[in-house]
Length: 239
Length: 309
Image (tube, rainbow over all chains, first blue to last red; front, top):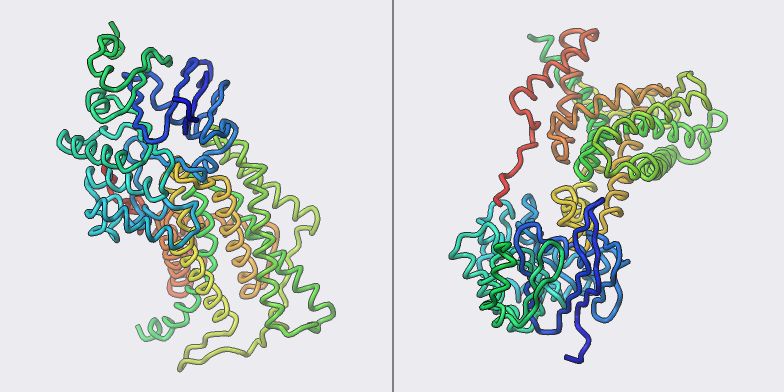
């Protein structure tokens, strides 16, 4: 691919104190893709996501977002440039209403008409949220909270949607529904970078995948090839 | 019983006045705790500084016993200057004394707050001496002014305190409930990292919180001066403690709770003074508060919604 990627990480190293978490991580996400970052516990998946967002600062390496180096920029700048995130465990604002939660997703926008339009779009995608617009976020069920977290991220019409473990803590049937929605969002043109433990599920809807093991990218390929890869199983099982 | 009934309305007025001041102080405690989970024990001294700023404005505008401008404007100026000054002071305190310790163990900023408290008290004592200063309220509001309801009298000064407090609370509620800044403040209070993920500049929200909370304390200082007239460098200690108590009783971190807690504390104190004995005013007030906390440990409005994960 010769076009510039929406997101490019080059030789990222991250430390928590003395501990070297990410070691020379490089990856790219191109427009329209759904890229999965896979790996077991403590492989550095979440740290990668936090580094992309600017919550964790890398000790070396560059992050380019839409062609611009952003590794020195604060989180708010990156969000303003078009990132949005569905955080791990959803992180709904429990004592704010569903409507207010969605408004927080459009926090950096000032175009009233555009926001209104995107509200409509999101509520059409998740009709359940429309019924519960004035209910407090904390009173929603787990599945509804997942919808709210996705709606909150989509309301900003992101250039890149980041998702951290969308299957975590959801009942199997909800996980399946959830992945269908994610696939649908991707097919409608949103570029997605997803961190996920559930490799089979993620790869079944993904374009490409990266496999992370103890802070290093050990494998990368098209999603359909990774699904049957022996090495992926090794990375997960550790043998 | 008749004596009780006869006194009741008067004690309610006293309680509302005292409660208004406590509530304004409690709001700053509660808001800062909400966003930082930190007790700003210098808050009472910010209130004291507010009382002195108001005093300074008053002295400047009433140079020789005759007001230079219409008294109403003097009162408005005293409030605005004290609120602005205290707001900026609060922001400076956060910047220098708390921000460097943001990621330290929770005791560190608490100690730092006590340090700021001593610093402010001693700075005032050093520059203005430890003498009492008196607000010349009688030159601003005619001593006889007030409203009569049968046998009960609502003096103008007390009416002013109650009305200004209610206006400030309405403005604050509007700000927190309806504006973007208010939503950001609530989001940061609920989950700081998630708020940052939505693009909220957390540092700016914290600065705004300190500004608003401290400005309310400044207003409380001026209102105290207007009603009770006497101000001195150590007045922030007890008032801060009362404001903190009111915040805890209402449910710390909860804004309507701070208002409710303030009025409840003021009312209890005033009833204790009026119906039992002035000597036991604090004892009775705190006993009632201990009872409230035994029944509702999170405070009156401090109940949290269960968070599903």
